Amino acid sequence: MVVGVLKIELFIEGSRSLKDKRTVVKSITEKVRNKFKNVSISEVGSNDLWQKATLGVCIITNEGPFANSVLDQVLNYIQTISADRIFNNEIEIIHL
Image (cartoon, rainbow, N blue to C red; front, side, top):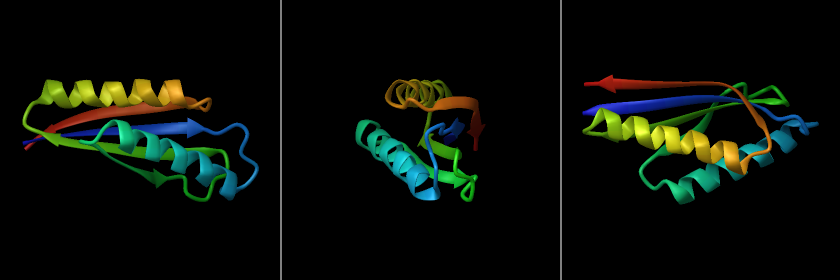
């Protein structure tokens, strides 16, 4: 079993409140869920900051290269659908 994890940190420039931030995060997570049926995505950090969001994306599969490929596609997709700046991302592939 292979677990692929992607951590994305976003800077949400136009956010003036937690409500603004949550609207952006909800939009991104819904779009990712609709396009990639085999991944899970959630806000996993920076919950009390207005202009920063930390998203976690996970996939479980039986092949490491497939997990890495899907997570790369998710990252590229988020970059295309979001005007917000991704200032950090990490991919980790764990073989169990």
